Length: 209
Ligand code: FES
Image (cartoon, rainbow, N blue to C red; front, side, top):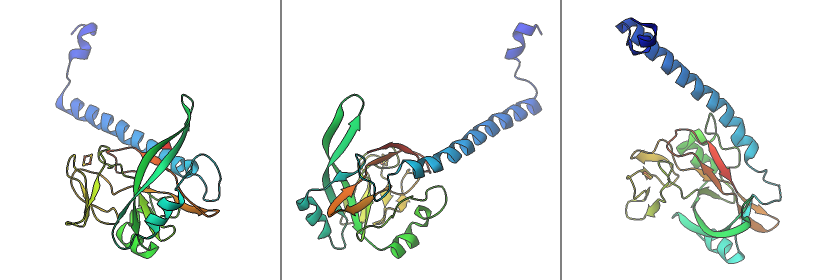
């Protein structure tokens, strides 16, 4: 076979198997390296609980009162998302998150992955007696909603279902609902908006604030 034709040669079955293995090994190595980078990135990007600054969006006193009254049903918390970027400067847009009243012990029992390993949340996962969830479905990014009749969060796009504490129960999503930082800072209730990569078993930060 001419040298210029060599790339067309599929090779023997043994060679093909070796090539497939090498390709898979390269992908796996890339994943491990990516994970190694992603974990410290999550921890380093999330703002400290006592930090002032643009990464925290405040609730109005009325919005804060409304969500603090929530009892045992998840509550939709609306707030004005404060963002700063190089193109538009500071902007405020209406946004919402889901708040669930719970305790750390309860959350730990239901969502142990938020307390250790690759998806450890580098922030108190329960603050002010609540866990706050991003409204973005971790499958492909639709907005899911609480279904009171079924007592589940259900995504209308591809049917992923999550229990009250965000544990993935059904559908194509690869992880549970993503928590967001919440704090009571100098008498003001504040939330940090974080967008994570969708369709991944790991919470990889894409954007903060
Ligand atoms: S985007 Fe929610 S299930 Fe697909």
